[in-house]
Image (cartoon, rainbow, N blue to C red; front, side):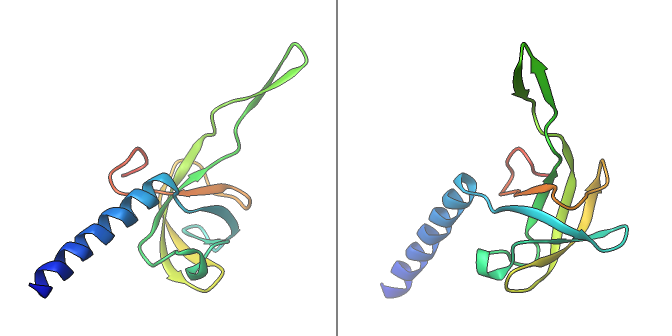
Length: 119
């Protein structure tokens, strides 16, 4: 039946979208702090952000100079934010977990499903 086909197509679409999001999570930057518990990020609805989207906040990686060569370390996880309001090119997010205070230019990466960055 047509209803059965529509249901199958919807399930397939959801599976495809989930796989794409897991392979290519949204990434951006914190551009401004809005008080102690909110931040503004540089991506919005035009880039696919919706209310409820969760991001991990990633601090700058530490570098070590060894024998004249600069080696990049693992970036530090500073916390988790959740989008509460979206505009076309930016979004406002609440701080959900804060291991270190987020700062402008901290990178953010979408937390998709129950993967490594999930709460």
